[in-house]
Length: 208
Image (cartoon, rainbow, N blue to C red; front, side, top):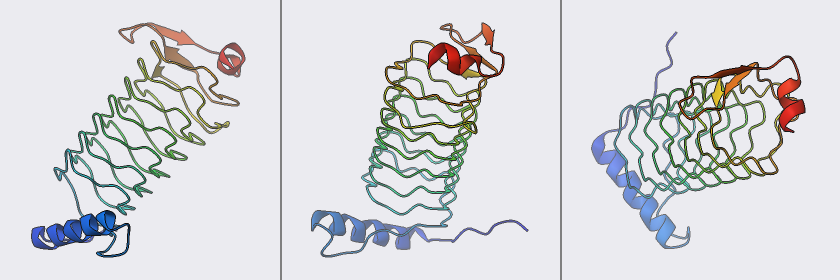
């Protein structure tokens, strides 16, 4: 059975955003926090919008355009963000637990201290992104493009965190924690074409 997402009219959506803006401006004393959990927001264009603290948990945001959006402290738990455009988006402290971020464009996004535990980010583009202090526990990072990304001081990974096929050219990895991470092969060259294979446990041994 296909999951049915909550339908919201344009008028209702505008009202929700207006109330949320008041809620932010008044320090949470007036208006109302936007609750878009489980909403059908497929392909919506919210680029450059102030989306701080909005509840997008479980929402259908496939193909959404969120370039330059302010998503600080937003709730994106289990949200469907497949092929979403999030270039330069501010996702500091955002909760993306179990979010589906397949093939999404997060170039130059700020994910400082973001919660990405159990997120599926297969083939996402995180080039030049900031992931300092991000929680990557059990995240699926297969074939993610990390070129020139900052992965320094991110929180713990474990044996279920997958980096196989990741493109790692020029990343900042000072203080990164890759204890138990699974990486069968990775690409370190600028074009992401030269594969380096790793036997079990060797990636961690070499770069921990």
